[in-house]
Image (cartoon, rainbow, N blue to C red; front, side, top):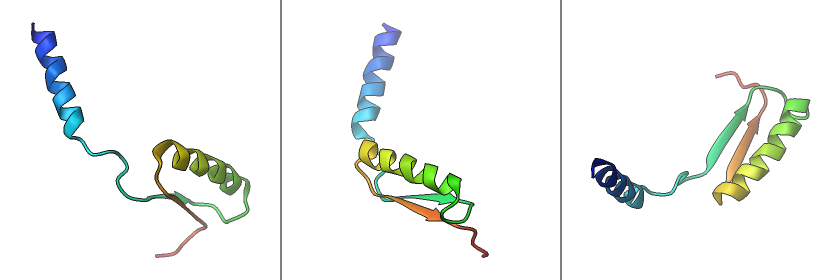
Length: 65
């Protein structure tokens, strides 16, 4: 009985939760553009964009703030 109540509650919570991510995702790579990690992350972000149906922005390079 308790398990059924927990299942009903979790279904209710999931129904109210907006889809994730709800805005473009920024993926920061701490290496310069053109380096091997940059190339690998480009492939990964393409996959994320297709899976999430959301824009994934890759920010490659070392930035001083």
